[in-house]
Length: 516
Image 1 (cartoon, rainbow, N blue to C red):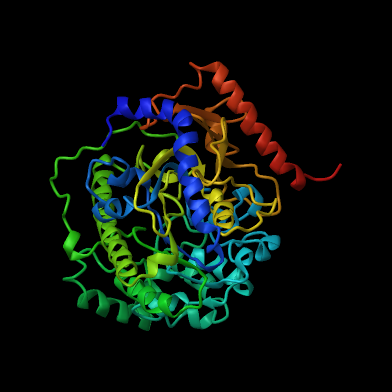
Image 2: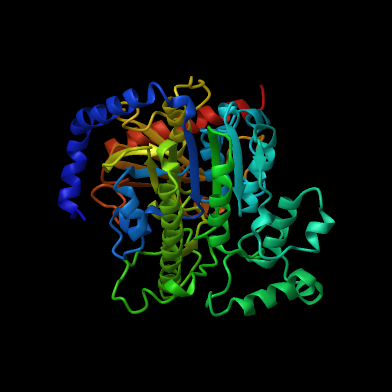
C-alpha cells in the first residue's frame, strides 16, 4: 500500500504518465476487439452500499477484500470513482441510464426515472444481446420493472428469497415493489415517508410472514449470528451466486447480465465465518466533528456498526471470489467482460450512520469500480476522477457501438483519453418532486483534486447560514478524510467551483421553472 506522500506524487504525475500507459493498453485491447467485439458477453455485478473507503483494495487498514484484490490483478482498478447519489434511487438510476439525477429525475426513494428513459437505458442500447437482470433490492427493482420492455429475461426478486410475504404483497399483487418498499418503511425506521408506530406491531402479531420469518431466523441462527441478510425478505447471498452460475452458461451469447445484490446493505448480518473477525483488532477510525446534518449517533454506536459492516464486506468478498473462480474454471471468462461496482457507499462518521443523509462525504459517494476484460493478465490502476455515468458509453465503445448524445458520461481510461479539468457531479434531493425545479438538495462537484459540496434549501441551512447555502471545499487528495474545509481560506478556487456548480444547477432547473 502506497503511503500518503507516494500517492500524492503519483497523482501529480498520473496525468502525464496516463497518456503513454493507457494508450499502450488501449491499442492492445482495440486490436484484440476488432474481430470479436460482437461476440463478447458483459456481466455487471453490483453490491449495494459498498464504499470504496472500506475496501483494503483501496488502502483501508482492515483487510476486507483479499479475494477482490487477488482478482483485481487481472483488471483495471478505478480509485476515484463516484456514484450519482448517496442512496439506491439516484445511484442505480445514474448507473442504468448514464445520466445524472437532475436528468433522469429519480429523486424520491420509490420513484422511477423520467418517462423518456424507459427506452433510453443500458438494456435498450444492447438490443441484440440477451439482456437479463436481477436484484434483491425493491428500490432497484423499480427500475428493472420500468425497463421490462428492454429485457429478455427478468428474474423476479422474490425468486431468491427464503420466504414469501403474504399480506401487503397480496393486497398490492400488481405492484410487488411498491408493497415491499411500503412494508420496509413500516418496519424499518429509516426516515421512510410511511413510517408508523402502530402498524408494525399489528402486522407482527397477525402476519403469517412474521411467523415464518422468526422460524427461519432461528433455523439459521448459528450460521448467521446477527440474523439473516435482508431487512424483511431474507435471503442468502450464496443462493444468488449459485443462481448466476446455473444461469449464465445457458444464455445465448452475447449477453448483457445485470445482477444487483443487497449486501453489504444494512442490517450488517455477516456469515459465521466472518463474525467478530475485527473484534478488538486495534483499528481506530478517525473521529470527526459532528456535521450540521448529524443524526446524533454516538461514536460508540458508529464504531460498532462500522465493524459489523466491515465484517459483512468479508462475506461479499468471499462470494464474489467464489463466482470469479467458477467463471474462470468454466472458461466463461474467455469471452466475458466482468464489471464489479456499487450504487453508493455508507457513512459511519460525523454523527451519521447509513446513507439516507444530506451528506455527500467521500465514504457515501466514492464507490469501487473494477473492469475485468477477457484475457487481461496485468493490473492497471486509474487515479483520474470518474463517474458511474461513464460505464455505459465505455461499454458501448468496447462493443464497437455508437454512443448516443444523450449520455452524460465519458469514456473511462484507458478506453478514452484523460480529460483535463473534468467536472463530475452527484446529487441528493430525496424529497424533491420529479417535475419541479430542485429547491432543497445537496449537490457535489469534483474537479481535479478539489471537491465542492453545496447544501441548499434546507430549513436547517437557512437557520444556520446566511446566503444561498452552506458550502464545503476539500482537497480530497491531500485531505482524504475531509477534515479541513477550505472554502474561506481558498477564495479563488472556491469562487470558481461555486460558479460552475451554481450555473449547472440553474441550467438543470431551467426547464422546470414556470413560464413567464
